[in-house]
Length: 134
Length: 134
DNA sequence: AATAGATTCTTGACTCATTCCAGAAAGTGG
DNA sequence: CCACTTTCTGGAATGAGTCAAGAATCTATT
Image (cartoon, rainbow over all chains, first blue to last red):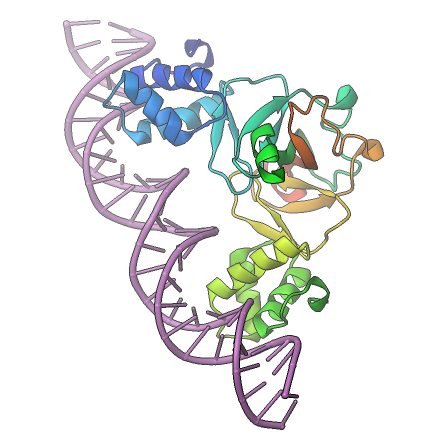
């Protein structure tokens, strides 16, 4: 699977890829801990590098909502979007909005060549929502 | 104008607000420099604080595309979106997409209470686009 | 206008995610 | 199995942003 992306298959990379699959929307530290449960000696640098390489290869997607640290997810290639909780930072997946029309269709591209449209919905997750209203 | 938001009118705040109006999509450092051209003694802390307060009050909007530092803009209340250049980080405004329908309409809210939909278009600005193809 | 009281600013240290670097280790093609 | 290249380790560095304490400034009131 890594080989398909012309990447070297190293122990750290396999572990990182597995961790991203096992922990959707996890931040780097969570992934680092998950990886170390399996390979206690990996450096954080290896994790950062693996994530970068895999992001560049399209095996993994990087998400970084304003005010939060970077997260990674393994669901790629289907152009879905995210709901982010303003309070706790929880992230949920959302399929592409109504009719898929808005994705990649700006009313005026201002001369830019657009290759992706990213939608982020902001709000409160069920937990934080009830907590705040009580 | 600041008074309308129940904020104290201090010299730094006036200067910061002016700088945000004068430099759309500017990062904090740019704003800091612009402010210091007028009030050489302002601390960066004052700028950060002013921006936070004004963001909370809705006088200013914070934008933070993945991988770039935070920017601020003064155009608020009209729910427009942005095009970001992957290469140089330039930002341009785009009015709300087709029919305004997608804004605030997730196909499935997963139990979240959504209050805002943010759309970011990624691509290359005219300058970087021609530079890369040459 | 002067004063009291509270918010806001200055200064400077500090956090923490992420990056940079050099040498050691491990993967790959031949 | 070897040589070559990429990747990993370990540790230091960067830089946006935050924290904290005391000084300065703003607002409402007299």
